[in-house]
Length: 317
Image 1 (cartoon, helix red, strand yellow):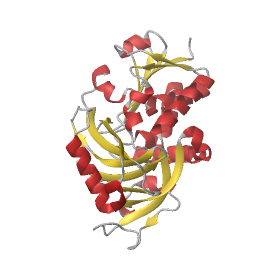
Image 2 (cartoon, one colour):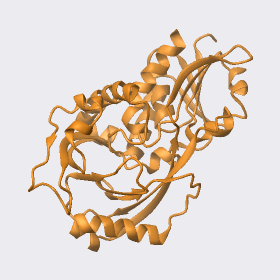
Image 3 (spheres, one colour):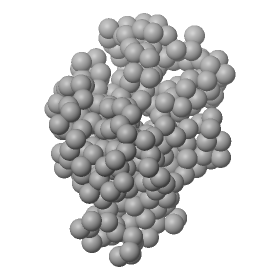
């Protein structure tokens, strides 16, 4: 009983945390309100890059650790869904990037021939791109192989989980707003379009921190992911045709060949934003130890492994 842990949430943060705990010898059960393929993680474009996440000094360590794990997983891309791809962050400058950039050994300023449109600055780097559908299935398989399991169950409260096991890890993302409750967790809606890839091999992004409209083209095995949006406090999950048309137009202005690409699908997800990630332990009224691991904004993929390992350490403290 003392080794049993309930992990709340089946997105990339929850499943990664569950894998770290189970492979570390814990008996882990994930309570999933919805299956992994219906979480926000499944909608994500999957690019490793800190975006809409604080605090910077902690994000750096989480991001670098996750980068290292993904780089190893990329050696088995067909199974893990992780690939290392070189690309271009338009509008960025080396001096303006956070300390997480130390993970990017090949990062350099883009030259004038590499820039697109009206952009006069940019940086090039090789980073992981995660096909989240494949990766979430991989994490589930690893969890099962380590003796863990996923149970379709929504927690009515943290105490309910604490009455079932002496340790709880809260990875409920936006759900923490009601479950904790934590009104500091707010949605940042993101819409994207998936098109047939017309031959784009490198990723391309322009996403300023506070911009509502962003621009990215991310090559994935299933198509080219075009984005996007970042609308604060918007709860809708139905794609807006006008927004989709705007996304394609923005991308086509930089990558003209996407204008004629066949549309394969539309996606909308709600990023779980918070002024700062909550990664800390507290004792629940019934005595169980709860570690909170939520509020990762637009960077759940980017920090998943670093945060999971720190969450595991907090359970041992």
